[in-house]
Image (cartoon, rainbow, N blue to C red; front, side, top):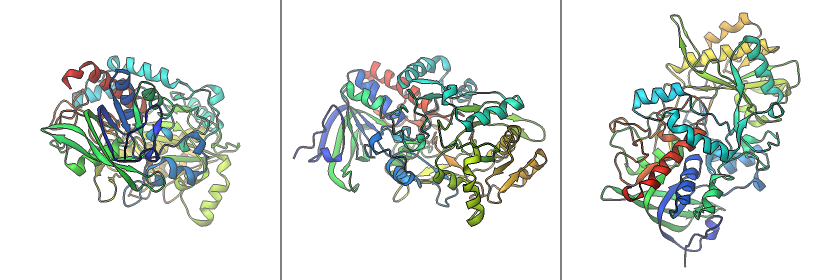
Length: 518
């Protein structure tokens, strides 16, 4: 039986009726921001491209807005991924389009001060002069624009009101949507195809240039011959039960790994590949999203409308003083559906029920904390093992975030503000702010979510301290490129999706231009 992968559309395991044995120019593992962009660019350059995705092919017809359904459909492990002690949730995607299906579509260019730090600390020359042309193309393809007044819901308007009352710098968030329906289901997949995920942008673009795309494709190993990656092996899975139904073998001149900050190092670690530096799986940064909940006099209904349309930039860069530091985080308005919010609010029984009953009057915002204390990814027996805790230098940043955002909500007219630690710290006036200094940050005491998942195969000039070179190729293996967020030296202190795509495009253009040398 033939296992030929059909062209012209996204194929799934149901389309495969025999073992797959393909030879292409480029095979890409992972269809998120990095992988889909790389596939699109190389296909446009005339190369034969096969884009493989372990997850399913989900479309907006299946995005029903029901939380239990959608966590199963678009999040890896039904959204249960994180450290073994359950102290946090570290989320990533598992479908065609990767995490872009459930991301907020916030589209920031990396700040210049962060790019200078990458150059200083890692020898990575990704200046804005280099990245801006790629940013511009990505922004045009994805319809990136600052959130308009019509796209700003009550929750984000409250954040803006508080920031302006305090004189803090802030701005509307640039986001990747076209004619947003303001439905509020962004974290569960857009049912109206307005959010410009890779499912709607780079994947179909790659197909239009001749790339083939296969969902339900599990890559178990990267094939290596004489110091060069030459292809992949694995299995085609059934979309109904995720069981293997056919063998998968692909030979390629270029193998591009884009399985994300968790999946990419896990695959390499299982084989012991690209590991001479000892850095594979290390330096795991997630830009922790801590949450603050403010009870307002007005009805907010934060689940309605574009969840994130305003951000406070005043405290993005850390300011160190003799007594304590301030900043090191962005404040971003956000809310979600009741089930997700319930996991972030503390308390049990009656106390928790009372909070949920008042949720319509609740305003919420999160941190994008520029974390300095990394975690680690190891291969694990059944799935990647995530080690990450808020600790060390990041705890003062978290305390200051709670203090500053509580102050902002009081200035915006909040009746009281809840810092959702295990002790349920309520702030009713500025005199209560010192209570935040007593919050216990031991694992499990303060909930947070990580979604950016960067730096586990970081780029750098020194092969003893990094996994990939500036051109995206691994130091150790010819033919093996990594093009997802795992190559960023750290998180860019903002949502990294735009930078992941810009860097992937940069690497792809270079590969296309130097094809005879790769």
